[in-house]
Image (tube, rainbow, N blue to C red):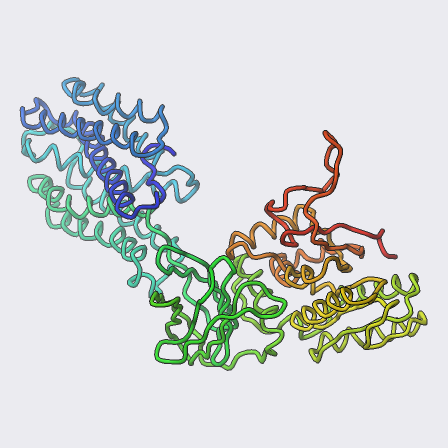
Length: 586
């Protein structure tokens, strides 16, 4: 961690607050010291009290810097430079030119370190705000002990300078406010981050107004002293902004809401979909734990339960029109999340397909696309999936099972997929039936709930007697952990390799964004957006199995894409493996 950068949380609220206050005190004292040293040549002989004040500022800056080195990880080089400059300025103050250059170096150090990682406009406004505040502090300190009439006669005029510095602070504060993304919504006055931005933007205006009333040279130093409090508070707020978490964007009606909740010491993500008046699903990852409930304040509170084929737990909540507070509870612990269902009715989503629809919406949210939910994956059969199913049926026909056992449901996608499977099977002479058999291949084209039920029944049937000896096959959208892990092994036709970089990247991002939850095909497509067309390629059959290690000779190198550790990041199948088992299907 670099010197002066406001530290991240340490896990203890009291320790974190103390650490932030330490940093803010260090920055403020250093800004006063640097500004005073820069303007020192404007004053002749220094009174003893002024020398003592500068020495005190140097000592405070050095001590706070040293203490911060023990409290956090800091850059050793930056710390040493800071200590040398802070202690050197009080010594060099009798030599105005040398002291000014040391003070300029200290001011540059503060600007660079407070602006670490910021570029372009952000770096520019950091520089302007810090430098203008430091000069304001410098005039304030010098004018307390040296009256204006005893300052050296130069072309440098304090009255116009006060207006210039105040104007720069106002402009920098305004740019920071408008570039924050908060606009003028309720987060400005309803969150600590927004209130801090208001302090940064408004207090310099007050200091500038004061400067207007004391513009003449005889009264100009009074403007600095009267405005110093406003500038100091604004400077502290500017420095503290990095330590204040930016508030999430306000909920948008019709856009699924991804928010964070905290119960006790535990924090976990929450997904509300579709966020329209009426029935909504509130989704929690498995890592959030059990016994969670959700509901609207003053309304019914429903328990979050497991849904077939979906990870985590889900609670049904009826949202009223407009804004309301969603209550999430576990036992006596409660927390609230603001939701906004708007006034318009939402998309009609079949209960069985709602979890898959929510998962697809989550992919878009992870990609920071806040799009109103207008359709669900189960509403239509995509061209990519229809082509994959045709190639799969032709592949199965070549293996010559006695029949193809087809499982479907009433969703538009499944109806279209089942019709396509029957037509393709008829062309190849492959019988299609609904009953299981010993020499059949099972093909599931239903939604998540139906797919999970079909696979668990197939697994039970295979334990009792020979069933589906030509394999268990899933439509591409059923590539989901709970479904494929309900059997020892299953196969799915895919147009991408789940072990490739883009797919693994999404799996990692999805897991990080939603409590370690596994990726889904609908979420992957939403995350990629228009880029999905460049990812989808030729169809291959992949086998998913509950296998987490393969026998290898000592020292034998891993095959490409093979990782033996069951818990590596980016898995598409929890505690399992997915590998291609066919060549490209032409």
